[in-house]
Image 1 (cartoon, rainbow, N blue to C red):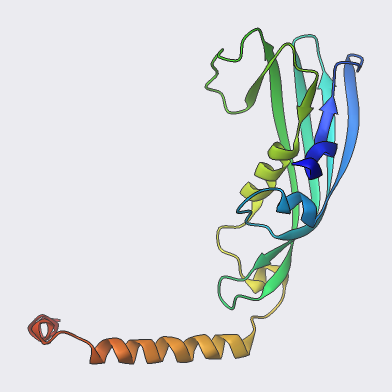
Image 2: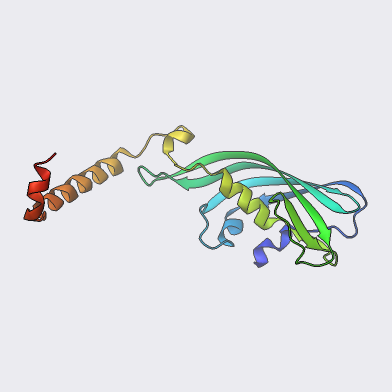
Length: 175
């Protein structure tokens, strides 16, 4: 995780109040996370850290493009992304002090810095659409690939019909 060392924000020497941090996100960032949905991207993350006596409030603004694969034709396309998120970080005497609220992160009092790389990665991953299609980016799908996939699907259906078990014929007549 050496590539993510720059995403650590030391907060112990900061005065109370708001502080701004900027991070550039590229392929090395996504390579640091195993099994990442995003393989490449060019994003800029702006983090506003509001330091208070008993907690930190982090406001994230991430903007740029990520490279996704189309679920229909398998070609890569650039998906613009922009998101605003917030994370509250509270300090506790011991790490076992439980919290059920997902928006509140607990840090031990002895911590001197907070690593925001995982938070940024999670925010980007959650912002990815469930179904990715070229049309989302204003592109059309690769017609040659679609034709090849249709051809393979039809030949696969024919093969399944030929391999049908004759015992199922009686059930098919019930349709």
